[in-house]
Amino acid sequence: MADLDPRPVALITPEGMPVDHPQFDVTLPSEELTELYEWMVVTRAVDGEFVNLQRQGQLALYPSCRGQEAAQVGCAAALRRDDWLFPQYRELGLFLMRGIPASAVGAVWRGTWHGGWGFPEHACAAMSIPIGTHALHAVGAAMAAPRLGEDSLTVAFIGDGATSEGDVHEALNFAAVTAAPCVFYIQNNQWAISVPLSEQTRAPSLAHKAIGYGMPGVRVDGNDVLACRAVTEQAAARARAGGGPTLIDSGATAGTGRGPGVAADPHADTTDRTGGDSGPVLVGYGTRAGTDTGRRAVRRRPAPRRAPTDTGRPRAKPPVRHLARRLGVDLAALGAGSGPEGTITRADVHAAAASHTTGTARDGGSDSGTRSIPVRGIRARTAAHMERARREIPDAHCSLVVDFSRLLVLRDRLRAQDADHAATPFALLLRLLTLTLREHPRLNATYVQDGPEVRTYDAVHLGIGAATPRGLVVPMVRDAQDLSTVRLAQEAARLADGARAGTLTPRELTGSTFTVSNFGALGLDEGVPVVNHPEAAILGVGSIRPRPHVVDGDRLVVRPTAKLTCVFDHRVCDGAEAAAFLTALGALVEDPDTLLLRL
Image (cartoon, rainbow, N blue to C red; front, side, top):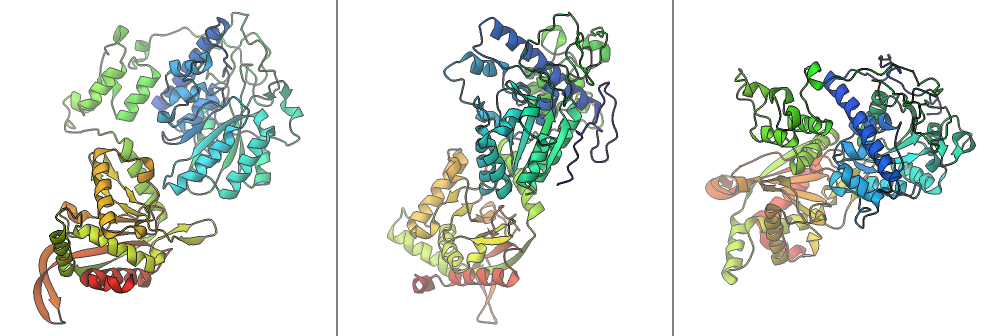
């Protein structure tokens, strides 16, 4: 870490030629490269409109992001949609790539009464006008993610001036100490309002400040969209794997046409009075042809504009292309769209996705039966959660066939006393499970990699897997150990109904310490569920059916039995502990009257 390379990572030259780099690869499909360029062009165009609106008095204030398009687009392209953004005030490119309408961004700078709410539906916090205060919020959210069982990360966007603020120091320190899944992304335009970088720090670069916090630091050419994308991808992967935060120093031009390390006041008038044009180069590389622009500014002749049909590419705006990629729609197969001059619109893409037909199916080719099913919402979060559990938890499992005869008799007695009693075999099993977990706390625990250590819990927060039309959810019975059998049964029923109706709150869907998967309700006799990360174990319950069962050592009878399967994290407990837990639970099920002796 102390040998941090002071040279910025660069993967393309100002002329757009690839650079061989020992650590990063720039191989991307041409469609993806084009999309990155289009997002930068759109960002610059919208930024220019906002500048004009501010000069006309339509916007109360607007800080331009001109020259920082590559830094923002490259970073956003490397993140997932559920990664939370904590922006400062120049992050227009990030907002647009997240699908936030330009009108909503403009409302903030116009000063509308609802403009400061942020964009939570896009996993984006409110803009922070005070310098650096939002960095602490980003770290707090990052620290909360693992506790909520999420593998998302947060990105705090700050300027070089913010690195001199105490709030940012505290955020960096907390993030490093707690190994929070957070990335600090400095858009370094070499100035903090009116103070150049040379008067802010004596460090070789802002990335070198990471050394003092015990985290990796990396410099990247903020005019190089591919380098910004690659560096952010690396930092995000490290954060998701539990490696903690990274400090990225992205040197950008901020509207001056100058490259990293060249101090030029970004608050000066950047209006191009020469009539020049930057030409068809990546947007980050120079914006004015009539100035002495240093290494990054290469004077070029304006390239003639070509209609989209000259390239053979479908006519569609970048947000529409992004939507098509996400929904698996082949734009080339759609032909002319319903928009002006045959432009493909969002409605065209949604219509194509609704038909579940890809380009080959439209052409009647050999793959006409192919269907593209987008994975979104709960199913996307479940997929990411399952991947993390399989990747991080070395699980093992053990099973036991249990006689439910006496538990069913107890159920019938309770119903005879009260016809409205909510007791079901599953609800009674949850009562017995809660008691067993109190006696075997290693199963009601979490493995913490920092240390490492096993963290056990006195409270039993029971998660109950529920299949819904929107996908798998795990509502939670909080403090199950404090509930009576009747109250536990009622709460389990309420949560099941709420899960199917989609009315449960986030608090009712997060924070469980042990999960039960009742796949017997689906007619399955047995199964091996996936541990609900970061918990230590999960119990699978098969269907209760009349089956041959041996009693008294050698007598074969027919009894209502079910197979219980415990899947456990082998880092937390070994097979003997899991077997003791499952055997104790089975003994209670087969003789529930002994429960009185343990209360």
